[in-house]
Image (cartoon, rainbow over all chains, first blue to last red; front, side):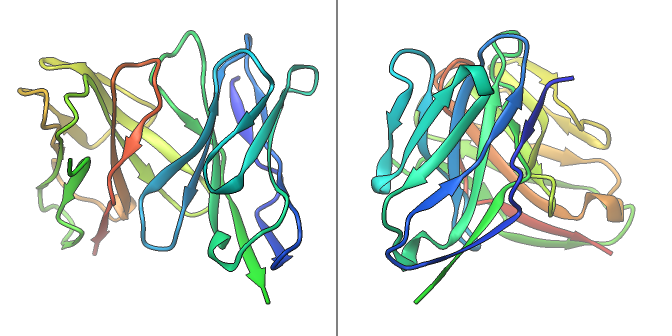
Length: 114
Length: 112
């Protein structure tokens, strides 16, 4: 069955430290991959996406993600977090046989400490 | 552009009541969809539409109806509300099925 897994439910990071959020997927063919961020009480905002091409993708707010086909992973990174990065982050996937039907991971809650 | 708008922001219903969650977009997007968000489960697709007059079921369609009479609007109807439908509902739209989706601010629904 197709699935999207975010292994970390909750991550605490110090302001200025680096951040890496993990995402693994199980799909027959390479799907389209997305990272969204949700601030408290808000909707979802797209951080970045991967469709094809360069496996290192740059997004908004200083985030980047790397697609690794051999590991079926699409991990999100930021070199230095700011207090405003505290939010919930969702990895989402669309299979090429199920266009438009985003499948989301369970999310990772990021807490930023001073 | 207002983007994707949803009304109401909050709603409390009693079991058995019906209501419609409104969703509108002003980006001339063909594709629209409804998701529900529950703790620890991410977002799950309820229904989607690839254009006016065309709708289809997603992962969790039971208890919900949709219609798409115009490109701009995609209302979600709860036929007979149940406590299991307590959730946050998000509407999203995109240029097409193969493009990124833009989300509205959500509607928090509580069914007692």
